Length: 403
Image (cartoon, rainbow, N blue to C red; front, top):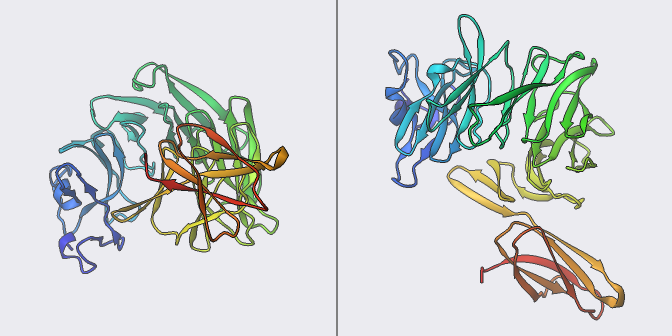
């Protein structure tokens, strides 16, 4: 079955019955698909009828994309790594082997796995300049993650390791590898994630019904939760924040966070389970509940409905992006807090994405709103004092045209 002749339609991977990811070059307007890209980069003769290869997923890099391809007849997926910079395609997979590592890009660096006749190697590679790479000898690797500071963490040999460069600008030289955790019944297949400062992993089995979720910070190691294999990721990290799931009163999956200062807070209180999806740089959390996507802001108990749960989410400078096909929806996560002052005045404190303009409005009936204050947010939080009002007054902040 040729891709273009698929009875499922021209944009569907036949074996998976799902849309084929594509890359759009905004400069040239060219859409990159499996058919247009992979012809010259398949090792050995490929018969499109018996052994078709298609783009399965991708990650954007500064000058293009990292493409993760698969043979559709191998249901688990056979990785073929391609780096696409502008209109030049670099074949990266000659140094890599088929494993289940999920590709990730930080800057222009990604990681892979190479199995030789004598040893196993974890490979760091520049997707823009493929000749820049580093091979780290390992016994075996099940999971790995790359932090924004080019920290590479991975689980191997019943231990959790971190490989850190002396200079993040050149992650392929002068790296120091340390053992962060080992033994204690830890599984070789423990998942591990990092945000460049903290490291979280599953390990140290405590009961037959679950595995301890551990976090390693600058202050040491602590247990966040007993993770009984809920659907969704065990833990996500961002800018010192940790988001994870923890059993509720009836065993349902509830979303919790740990702040950079170490404060743990329950973020969902539903009667059935929620699936953790993402964590933002300021402790914002998105999760799926009852087939809908919600966002929870730190310090605000009531989550906000975002959409029906379709698409994928990304965080960009404090803004929540939901990707639906070729459309990108932007949600600006802001907080407006009000505190009563002596004499009847109100102090309003705003936190939100930088570089945007907002208008604070007031209303006595939640129907008629009056503009009170317009400002452009630059950094951190900003406060404003409203004089005493006759009776109660509700406040809200809305985006305003940039002055």
